[in-house]
Each structure stands twice: as structure tokens, then as C-alpha cells.
Length: 116
Length: 113
Image (cartoon, each protein chain N blue to C red):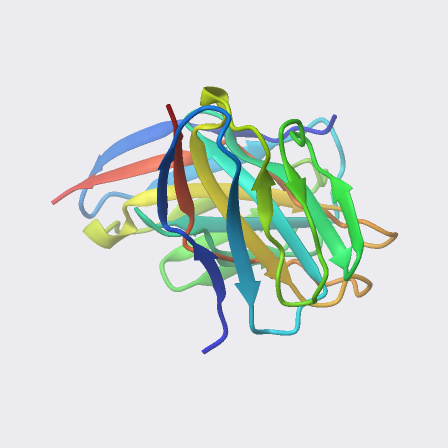
């Protein structure tokens, strides 16, 4: 089954303790992206990746890191989490970065992160 | 940066009623999309629109790409309880090196049986 898999689904941590949220897709998609969803603010892009070893900042990259060593994986790293990073996080992927009709973004089920 | 203004922010309706929500922008886009997020899940694409004036249906859902290319609306007819969720508009200008989606802030729909 074609899917985007995020882990963990729920995570409670403390300020300053490094954490990684994993994301994996089995659709051979070039493009992957991370979003955070906050009440009243909708979905805001954190980082995206056009292909392996190619990453770029989205709208709210501060406090986050990503890597894209393999096509299928795009982990989100919080080196020193803070309470304002408490949010619902979504990973997403889509096929080809260069065709016009590449809007079919597939989302994972989300990771609810709480930073105390 | 570019922003999408989505309204209303939330709606509480009775089962069987029709629903209408819209999205506007000061920028021109060449693609408009509507996503639905069920509680506890990620957003799923409902309808994609590619041409100004285009009207597309998906079951009880109908969406239109505005003539000015700066707006879009989504209508849901004869709502049912499973329509509950958050609806997001999204837009982009494909081509070039990016093609990142911009999302509206969402319309939260509640349906009373």
C-alpha cells in the first residue's frame, strides 16, 4: 500500500532533549516536506527536499533540521526542543518535481509533539 | 509572502444542509486545491483545479477556480456526519524549481446529526 509513515505518533519530551521524528515513503517520490499544524494557523511548511541531498527552508525553519540521505526517508530533527515547538507535525511527499501537475501531496498521519 | 485567506474559520451545521467555503488571495495562482483532514489524520486531496473558471465535482463536493485566478470556493451539498473535519484550500504556481503549496488556515466543519 502506497503510504507516508511517520513515527512516533505521539511524543512527550522536555525542553532541550534532542529528538528525531522519522518519515518514510514507499512511492519513490522525489519531493518530501515537513509541516506543522497549529490551531488558527493552518499548515506551515518547515523544510522541504526536492531530492536526495537537496533540502531547503520553508516558512518556519527555526529550531529544526532535516536530512535527505536516501530517497525514501526525510527525518525531522529538533536539536534543542522548546515549548513553542509543541505542535502537530506532518510529513508529506509527492512525485516528480518538474512536471506541472505535481500537486498530489500525500500526507502521513501526523506526530503530536508536546515539549514540557 | 503569499497568503491564502480562507473563510469561514468554522461552521456548525445541521445534517442535510449545504455548506460553502472560500479562499481568496492577492496573488494569482495557476492551481487551486482542496484538502480534507479527518480528525487524527493527515489531509487528503479532494479536488484539484487547473484552469480559471473551471468547475469540478467529486460526489457531493463541487469546487470552482475563480476567473481572476485569485480565489476558489468549495461547496458540499446535503451534508452528512462524516463530512466533519477541517477543510484546507491550497494553491501553487507550478513550473520552475519549487512548486511549493501554500495552505489556507482551514475551515473546521461540525455536522449535527
